[in-house]
Length: 512
Image (cartoon, rainbow, N blue to C red; front, top):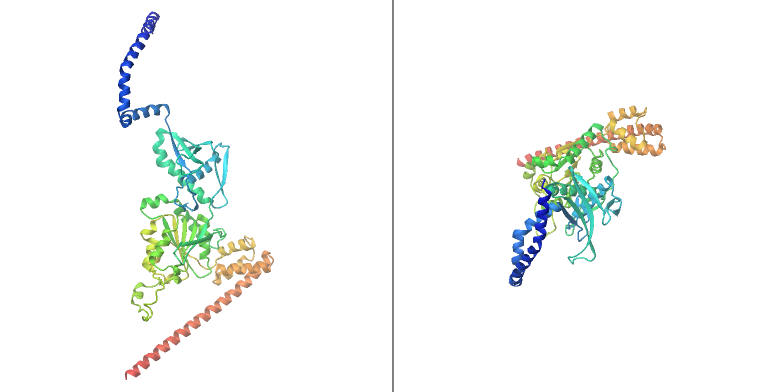
């Protein structure tokens, strides 16, 4: 510790010499002032800017970082409207602002923000909650504290009239990489999910004319779920588990180098619920549906264009693919099949002809273009799986084959719950016996239940009694129709064989 006497002597010396210091500084300034004025007058301004940028700015920033170590990022309101119909914007404008607002609308419920603004979602009946101007809210990501605030400033660019809004993010300088590389992408993904959940789902179909747009749509509001789907419970659970694994394994598909898509083949007799299964899958995943009508697609290029204009989080469906085009059977036989004779007026007929090929369809499902977008499901339905080309339905293209079979007892229990509101009844054993002996589709059983419910005034016992009688009647009719069809086929085969024998005998007689 310094002695008091020495401190007093140092203070006296400082005060006594302070005047001389100022006097010397004044004399020095009188000498340098003309030189500084001369340099400032004749030296180019760019020289000062260059010197400042090269030597002083970095040091000034270091000083400012010590005083204020926080960084701000402004997400500006777009200049044009952003319209959402799917997983992403339809317009070409920047969608980040809308995604940040949607993300913050979910964060408000977990914080103490009090002054909020509610805006209707651009699609659907949901609301997007955002901060009122001048408010802020805190967020946390991986243990790092961040702050969002709503800022309004005058538009200084002159491109728009009025104010321009920003969502301003503030964070510590040391977390810059975490925010840029992880937090902001997380905000955008979560915001897209919220916007996606608020929109109305759609059912698209391809147009016959591609002059204006490839797809037209209506709102999709099908009530079917897996709970109401008439199918064995174990099979339904297997399908739902597979859908869950697909939806949650984005990183797995990227890590293994596979496009994020999955194919399902639904096959079985008519009336077994193939289209209903597609609706249940869409409702379970909250996806849109693109129903492709191949008969109005003219070329493979048009088919590829349809694929490009679909969006992520969607189900692409081709129903009754065995009836859509000549894409079934053995390709070798098709190559040997003689074509129709040419007509004289074919050259003058310039109408577009359907030239979609099996190769084009395979590329649509599993080619390079199929990887655009991601998170898509492709579904084929058919009544005759044996007629399809093996290359079309092999594993890797149609990853899961689902047989939609005749109505079993568990499927009937679901239908009884749907139509009659009963889980068990003493007449269920009679129904089970009929279903075990007869091949009835869920559509047949559902129609019988609807008729019995209407006639029996909704009472379970009378309805089930009528149902058993109606099922037996329909089983007999089906057996009779099947026998008649078999007899007609045998007669036709016999007639064909006889005609071939007569033709052969006639040709031999002519040869003699």
